[in-house]
Each structure stands twice: as structure tokens, then as C-alpha cells.
Length: 281
Image (cartoon, rainbow, N blue to C red; front, top):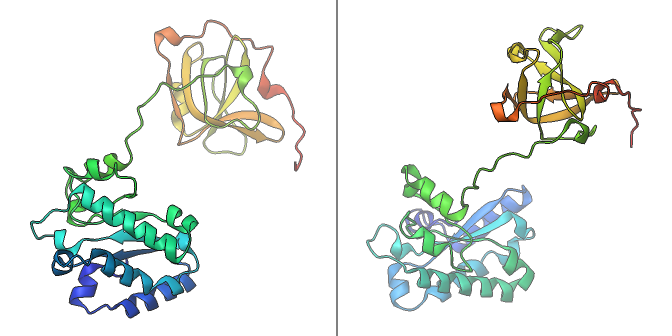
């Protein structure tokens, strides 16, 4: 974080110092959030764009990799003063900053750089602010220490609605399959893999075929012969040319619901019994 308003006002961090700091960060490939913004008296004097331009002009020559730069606009007059910048005022400042960068560097850089807003962001104002076209996110201070900080996060990145996973048939599993979900009826009891302390194998299947589950730990004890299990987020592993469906700590394994019970298993099509030729391709 370089050029923060408190560093500038309380510690005398000048434009020249911010340029030197950015130069060193660029040499060390360190990402920077570069803060700019005007004081209350500068705002009232109509010097917002002038101040922002001066602070940006000081550092252009030190930046070679713009992918390591994020700009944060801090209207200092709206931080802890009781005065509030409207979303429109914030958007106007951000749009002007983007135009400055386009003029001084390039349109490509201006369109790609993230410009954050850092003027007393709250759960109440963030939803409208984030809708503005030139506001790419927030630089949050004191509000990040409050439980409602999550409201600010979800305003920027709405949570995904959970969806029922898609379950595949055994014959849909390939040697490179990842994130495999399936319902399988347990055909045989768990057996211990030679030379392993806690690795067990269980044959499960459905009407399309059968596959061996490779299960580490004591989770295999829940696989009783005849029951249907639900496997989520497993991945196909090749062990000496044979497919195993690995159920690791990132996978879920539990009894299936009654409506998902598998009636029969096509054991004649056991994909774990087919030897694949291993190549470097």
C-alpha cells in the first residue's frame, strides 16, 4: 500500500517518495495498491482532478508492469469527516482517473487497470457504488473489522446458488476424469491394499458398469455390501495402468438417499479391470 492518505498527511510521504517506493516494488515484482485523492480544501477549491493527476504523473515513469498496479481513489475529505461522497461523485472521479491513465500511458492499460474506491465504504453505500462502470472494487479500512464486512464482499461478488451436482454413470468415467460424482452399489467388502497402512479398495457399480473406489482411512467401513453410496468430487487415478476412483479428503462419501438406490450392477464391465498403456503423451 503506497501513498495512503495518512502516510501522505501524517508522515510526509511526498509524490517523489511514492515514486521511489513504486520503483523498488516493480524491481522486486511486488504488487502495489497506489492511493491517490484530494483533501477537503482541495475538493472545495475544485482541484480534485488536478490533485489526482499530479499524484499519478509522479509515478508513471517508474511503472513497467501495470499488472502489478492497482489504483485506489481515496477522497480524504470523505473519510471519518461525516461528509459523504455520492456514488455519482465517486464515479466522476474514477472516470477522470481512467482518462488520465489512457492519455499518459494507453487505452489498453487504462481499461485493464483496477481502480478501487476508498472513501468510507459501508454495507449501505457499497451496493450502489459497485454498479458504477469505473468503480472496480473497494479499499476498505475500519469497516473490514465489523461483521457486516461480508455484506460488502457479497456486493462485489454475489454468492453462487448451490446446485445439485451432476451424477455420471460408471461408463462415463475416463482415466483423466476429475470431480466425479456417482451413485454406486457396493459389490464387495473393503479390502486392504498391500504395503499400505490405511488404503482400502471397494468395488461399486451401477447398471452401466463397475469401478474400484480407492479410499484412505476408516471411511471404507461405511461401505457395506448391498448398500448404495453417493460419491462426490472423486477423481480417476491410474495405478500401474488400472483405473481407480480415488476418494480423498476433498471427496464426499456417504449412503445414498432411498430414491437414488442402485438396483443392479453390471460387473462384466469393470473398468478397473482394464489395463491401460501408460505413455508420456
